[in-house]
Image (cartoon, rainbow, N blue to C red):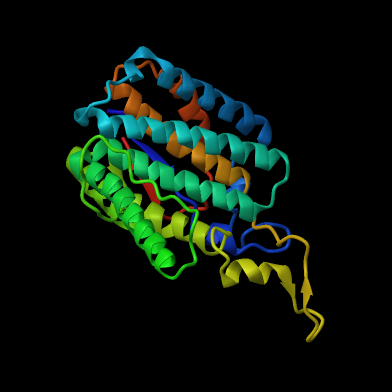
Length: 294
């Protein structure tokens, strides 16, 4: 990455929402209109998945399980998990899965990217937050189980304590705070920036308008009030023009994670050069906000 500045955009709020019936965004091209065509995007996805998985299976990615490597190991696991979601988003795109379902997968991909990049760059602070959040969730579940047992409403459920190699304190793993911390890290090493904008624009839009949660935006897509007071519920929601752009955006983020993770371990990532060039020719955005990596 060093020595080559690139701009990895997030999907602008307007590009995902203000579409007319033709799928074009009022006032300019949508992120979908600027994304790579399927004939370019699908082979590119396959190349990225192959390259990342080869890198993950190399000897240099096989780290000994010890406290000093926990963060790196979990980060590489997150990179592998991103590949799973990219593959499923690609399959959903080919199968014409509704965009709201794709949005759920893209949102989870983004959460995994936040997690993996923070574990890669954030050191012990990131690892403590990541593992502490698991401890906090486990403690909460134990409390719920005990309360239900006291009420006589739970009999055959067996609660399993965390199996862990060392102790950690309960804590929060908040994606907004993770994004801000990644920006702070980027300011110090000059390699990362704009992550908070990625959270504010893309993550919140995926959660709200695009179907990550059953919000008003999502449920309103099923309702047609054009005929006066008559309300008709459709069999599937009206799609947003955010499909190829969603897949391409996942690829952009995962290649950035792979390049940073592989470069520090001396793993060959020369295959990323043509990938980055293709991505640079087809940005899935209408502008505004972005993730900057150098």
